Image (cartoon, rainbow, N blue to C red; front, side):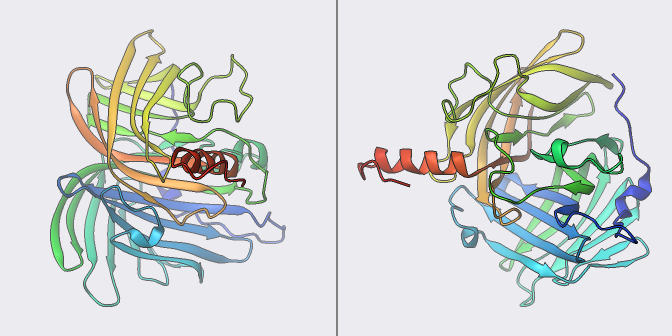
Length: 353
């Protein structure tokens, strides 16, 4: 399979409109993450650039355990909805609230630093690429419909080895993990009600070692009795995944099919807390993974959607174990149905919504 790459300088691509008028929902994004699995800690670092204005949104979300139902339940949150356009100086991007992305070697090495105003929370982490800067298309539902602007929209994805230190509420943690990063430029992500109708989609990046790397985005497969069954009309012949690849023994392969089966859901966040995945690559080989969340939180990144980040413990069929983010996104149809179901289960009644 041939998966393209983008040049290193795309790390710093944050174009702004010149003479033309851009859709106000046009965004560029930078996402980085890291985790401390032994402490059930995850981090979501995000910049959402809005070039039509121009302004930005983003910051730092650090969460621990599974009880982060409200965003303020997180261990630490500094995520601002409206900031000035971040400062770009050479290879360094700095937001108003102090999140700094230093691309020491664009396309390969980045240093992430931040310190809270009171000094009790900070991190200094170097992330070094373990995969190429892979080109990817649309990953957020709706982008494939709206980002039709002459082929200039795009994105990248890359697995990183993360090493450094986190200080959280005055307690120090060593960071040594593998994580994925991604970014987009000139994607159009509509926030108008009803603009996107889809079942929840889940992103399951996994890096076991250089001989096994897996990445996919999908909704739960038909026939697994997903929680959204009956809410959406999905054709039986529609693939459940819309982006997937695997690297096996150094060989990059495409994915023919994905069957993602959720075994348990969070009782209040509604995202998957246990799941299994079966993927068939383009050689016909089947790959199986099982995963369980050890940390999960609601995120502030896209307020018209339910966005959940988590730290997942993944195991392959040979018993290899890794930890990485699992992110899930869904819209109001699913949220309302799941809340009504939860209230009925608690004996509250039909609870009209």
